[in-house]
Image (cartoon, rainbow, N blue to C red):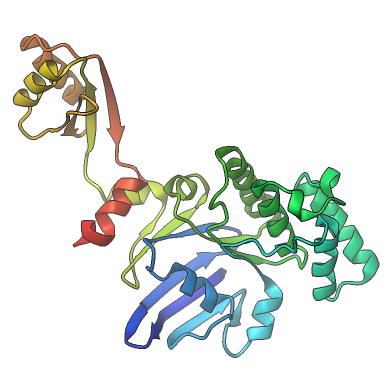
Length: 308
């Protein structure tokens, strides 16, 4: 069963069309990532699906409910963590969670039990009674997500949840997100600017550009859109680089890094041919790295100037 589905979703602000017919089908218990450049319509999509703003056209269902006719039922089934932390700096972590339990109309005992459980799950027990102003960015983000979970949502929208976090805090958030889907069956709708994040977390990825979905699939399926790969050869000096560049007229030289990017299919035969050509010309390479297409290549190819 689809946790989220949209058909022909459109939205415009004045004469600027932000969404131009977005179709999505996201299974229950999966992690879905929506990628796109700034202004592509990612946040607008989240706002429509979470009933914060209406669409101009099309239809959308979340957790089995129509986002227009059954907006209250949708709100009861979802949690939303926006780009900016929604925690109250004047309260402690425990008080923030208790506030959310009150807003979700939980009984006092149930709210306290839920708060204690979430503090343990997010490793915030020791900081439970400390004011949020003393928290690091990673701790604030974990508390923000914990507050989203107070109502035990079936679908969670995470709008760029790790923006501004250091690498360690980001990986901690990844583990939490994976656990929500794998262990608790929660459906995660993730927007992100970090392509590695989508690669690590998402079961399926869609690329949004110019208000339309320009590609969708698993990370591996999307990577296959970009043909071939490249062989990156590093040299000790500019003379060796120039000599190598003369051998491979279709390669791209990077004089500052003393590197040469040679397009290829990354097969053993291709790598051997490159090494043989260098050896026959008495060109000495310092190192060689075989690189396949990644989501960065997909993103640059499908969006913005790359797409045009």
